[in-house]
Amino acid sequence: MEIALEVRNVSLSMDSRVIFRGLNFQIRKGEAFFILGTSGSGKSLLIRMCAGLVFPDEGSVGVRGTELATASKEMLQRLRTGIGYVSQGSGLISNMAAYDNVALPLRYHTGLDEAEVGRKVEEKMALFGVDRDFDRSIPAQLSLEMQKKVALARAFVLDPELLLLDQPTSGLDSGKGQALATVIREYQREKGASLLEVSSEWPPFGPPFDRNGVLEGGRVGAEGSAEEIQAYIERTKKTELLVKE
Image (cartoon, rainbow, N blue to C red):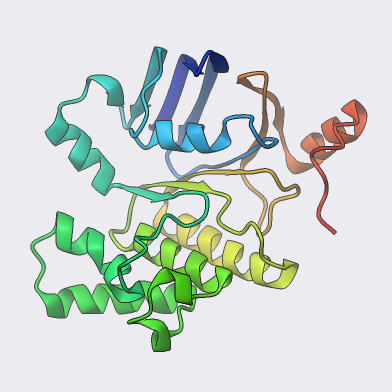
């Protein structure tokens, strides 16, 4: 089975604090992997590292067989067009309208004319239920839910093969979180995309993931089914990993 993402023997320190130490995991093509971690465990840094925005001190991160740290700028750019990345808090460009945020990857990475850009933007906005009345609104004028929907539409607009999502449903109530997570997972399965999602909330919204892990002590420790992770949380009395009501 083709490996979409491989993190191998990664160590990383920042400001004299060890974030990762001997971190290892793989995600196969078409697989969905959920990683749970407390605040400060390195979840967001892990997503950034897998997107090639941060490089480890030791070890390697590979996307479709290419090591990010040693890839040429041109290769890194090509790889990133196949990655759908959503940062914690959406990462939308603050002075850019919602429509233009979603259109940005198409305008930057493709030679499509504006009519085709508009068609693709409309398609992804419809997928995530973005209210088109907010096309010309900047992110600060949008609700948290709408910011997350716009960020996801932007991340998916190039039909990426690898999805890297940092808490895409955090802060939403159960109904809205479930609805949004279901759209993500249905898209992922339909397209055969690979997915890495990190969060501090358990259990994850939406359909079950293929695998689940817990990020602690700089490594992915416990790993298994949702039932196994639930049992691990209860057995170790990790009350900081609160179960959502």
